[in-house]
Every structure is written in structure tokens, then in C-alpha cells.
Image 1 (cartoon, rainbow, N blue to C red):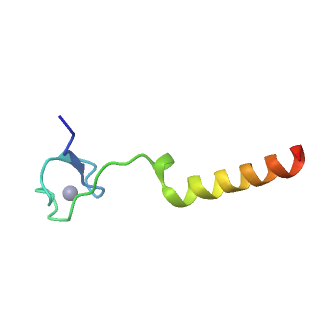
Image 2: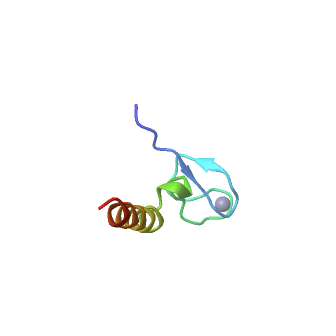
Length: 56
Ligand SMILES: [Zn+2]
């Protein structure tokens, strides 16, 4: 069973609803920051580039 849980970033409350019952704002999937595409891609690209340049 996949988790459909969402989180209100305003209240910090977890809910299954699209809209927070507490504040009425749209809820989001609670994805950990380390999965942020921008950050990880930037890091990997830098690591790979440096690694290959120095080992070549
Ligand atoms: Zn809320």
C-alpha cells in the first residue's frame, strides 16, 4: 500500500486530505530535502566531473 499521506507545511500536521483542515492550505507530499532534484543533481555532476578529471 503506497502512502498517500500528505503534510501541511504551515501546521506541520500530517493528513490524507488535499487541503489542511486546520488552516485550509493545500497540503504537500512530505519529501525529505535530500531528494530535492536540484541539489542532488548539482552535487553528483560536480562529484563526477572532478572524479573523472583527476583519475583520467
Ligand atoms: Zn495547516
